[in-house]
Amino acid sequence: MFDSLSNRLNEVFDRLRGRGALSEDDVAAALREIRIALLEADVALPVVRDFVNIFFIFVLLYIAFATILSLHGFKTKEMIINVIIIGLLMNFSLFAGQLIKLFCKNTIGFL
Image (cartoon, rainbow, N blue to C red):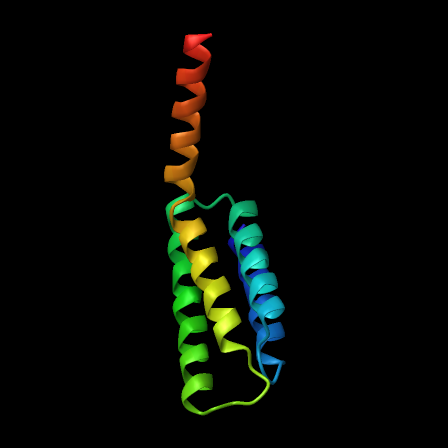
C-alpha cells in the first residue's frame, strides 16, 4: 500500500519538477492526483487534509518568490485566488458536509 502511494507521489512531484514554471492547471492537476493517491491508499481524511495543506504552503511560497522576482508570464493574482479557494474548500469540506447532513435530516423530519 505504501509503496504504491510513494510511487504515485513521486510521479506527481517528478512531473512538477520537470516544468520550468507552474501554471494554474499544473497545480490543480497535482493536487487532484495527490488527493486521489492518498484516498486510494485508504489514508484518513485528517492526514489527507494536512498533506494537501503542506502542498498549499509550498505553492504559496512559489507564488511569493515568483512575485518578488517579477517572473513574466506568471498569473499570480489568478493563481493565488484559486489556491485560496481550493484550500478553504479542502479544510472546510467536513464541516460543510456535516451542515448539509444536518439540514437534510431536519428537512426530512418536518415532512
